[in-house]
Length: 119
Image 1 (cartoon, one colour):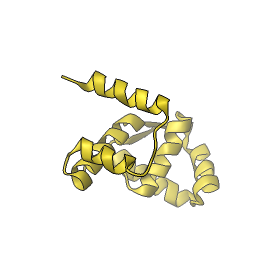
Image 2 (cartoon, rainbow, N blue to C red):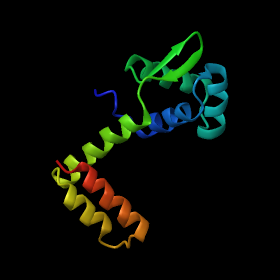
Image 3 (cartoon, one colour):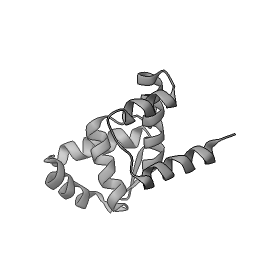
């Protein structure tokens, strides 16, 4: 399985780590209990699973990420584009903009992204 593919619970867990890393695993258990309602065993099970996949590492009880939020977003974005829109970025944008108006700033930002992405 691709290490950038995170299921919902894994994504929520990894988001916590991205926010607070580096973090002691004991403190991580407390945060996961407060935010996700997880037991200690659940936290350690998910941590081990994601460590085995190379997403996270737990060295001397200090947890850090090996994969960035941006890498996961890029993977998920490309996966969505290919799966739901046959790889067509114009179709994706047209679908999302169909019932939405852009502010002038958003339109300028998109224009700049398009200009920067041109070959």
